[in-house]
Structure formats: C-alpha cells, structure tokens
Length: 183
Image 1 (tube, rainbow, N blue to C red):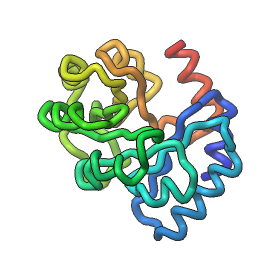
Image 2 (image 1 turned 90 degrees about the vertical axis):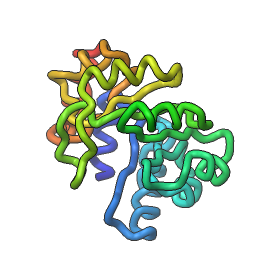
Image 3 (image 1 turned 30 degrees about the horizontal axis):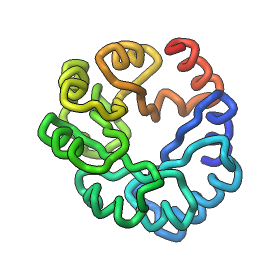
Image 4 (image 1 turned 120 degrees about the vertical axis):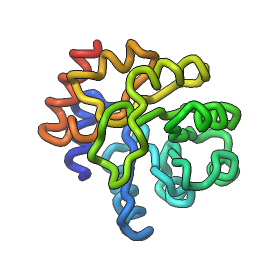
C-alpha cells in the first residue's frame, strides 16, 4: 500500500484518502503513520471514518460517511484547521451536509462501483449536475470513475474525482494518464 501511494505521489497525486474498513485500530494507525512518514508533506492525507486516528497519525483531514460521526461531532474532534469531507448519495443528504462545517462534499456513486460491498444507488451524471446546483462547496465525485469517464464527471459539475480501481494497476502511469486526460 505504501509503495502504491509513493507511486501515485510520483505520478502527481497530491491528495490521498486512507480507507481501511477491516483493519484494527492499531493496524490502521500503524499504516497511517507509515504513510505520513514516507509521504511527508508531498501529499495531503485524509483519514476515512476515524477522527481519533486522523489526529494520532497527524493527517490533514477526515472524511466521514452517512453512518459515521456526524460532521459536527467530527469537527469537534479534529478542530477547525483540518479538512472535513462528507459523503452524500442523494439531494437530501447533500443539502444537509452543505449546512455543516464540512470543507468539501462527496457525491456518488456516479457509476457502478465494486469497491463497496453494498453501494448506494448510482446517481449518474444527472445526480452530479443536481448536486452542483445545491452547493457552492467543493464537490468530489466518487464511484466508478475511470480515465474514460472522468472528464464527463467534471463537465457535469464536480470539482474533482476520487478514483480507486482505475489507479490500481501501474499507479504512477495511471495517475499521469489521468492528469494528461484532465489537464
């Protein structure tokens, strides 16, 4: 994992989210500290779900989902300086998250995804367009984003995209290609 993160950084990636749904708190913290140590300040690191481990690993921010700490509770833990992101899956959730102190909002899944066991319903490009109408906060599109469809997602209103599977094989080369396509 750390080697892949280093390759992504070498390919130009400047923001990574550490997401580990199955590891113990100790394993997550050990991994997170190693990421911080190896990537230093070249990449902003976002912890998924765990505000306590975000602080312990000295990450740059926290991302919470609909079943995690509320954005306001998370903000109380991480303080005002760290980034806070919130996952949303429909207009109601997005409107609610927009009223919080979240720094950015995620919308998705935009397309079908295999990275979640039970994904929420696909929102499609129209869901991204609708979400853009509902917030002025930076918006990250997530779910099934690939080199083939990323441009259409940005054109629909997302400020950036979150990618998992299309970066797994040859992370550096894949990241470089994403930047060429989106450049």
